[in-house]
Length: 404
Image 1 (cartoon, rainbow, N blue to C red):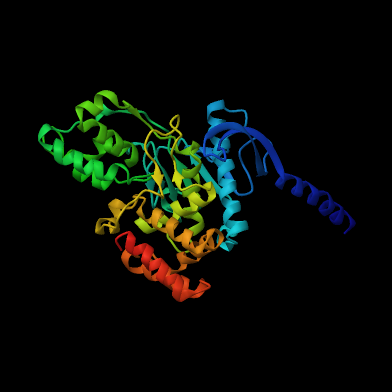
Image 2: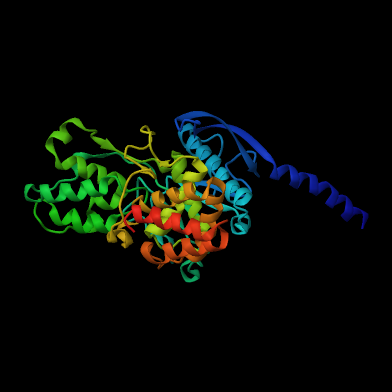
């Protein structure tokens, strides 16, 4: 008995020390003026003295299960450190400020950077022969695996794709489609963000290629880049004058853009009510709202041209509601982000954050902006607002100004 007690006494301090490891490393952060700078940051909650493995996050490369080591390639460790640092910041926001029991209970997450495989609901990773993915990020729901194929179960993960430069000449459109397509691109240019609008692009862009014949999506460059980058490339490609003087190369390194990291973790934190397997304007807008809260800025993924060359999102951009925003293809517009941000100004800063966090309970995957989102906002106000009648009138007035 004495031997066992001695063993326990020796183990407890060791465990406590392992959970409180810290390491200072170089990463990209935002200044108080929202400028990107590279500086030393402290990585907290590490359980490894040699690699990016912490109590809550393990940063790996591609399909590997081994954490990236601190001594690996400097460019890789810079991206891993930036990702780890901002994920920790996002988690602390939801656990400490929003008091999220769901976020607090999430076991260690595997975070993949430089990961190009598509996602498979059964196989975790799609086969290497499938079109590789670049310039985007996604949050992957947990899966049971496929025992018959040797695929082990996996937990919720976040995948950050590597950046890939794309030139404007790689997107070609015939002259007859020029005018119509330019109008379409102009409408979408300032309304797209991090994830995919691939179905829109496949139907709208590929249908207007030089030979007028829809191409095999697997062989199309549209399938290899994020929608936000492709939209900007496409827009620039349609006007010869703009094309001559505009940027020629586009890319997006999602693992180094703080707001994209916050956005993806927000999906995880909100997933107790908003499932990870779907992308809608409401689901993306809610994640955008909390990304903006953590970043303390109404702008997402802007002013960071070394790692991101498209316009990003802006909650203060003036937009009126359009019925198209209800469609999946329009999931990444910043209309919902802007709408929720403006309501926060009515409710007050701190009240607005808690209000929007509770709002998630009133929403589902099938919720619409003009239906369940508005109903949920008014119901949440009835429960939380100090003066529900007056505050609901103010909210309805603000929504009316946005065309709702």
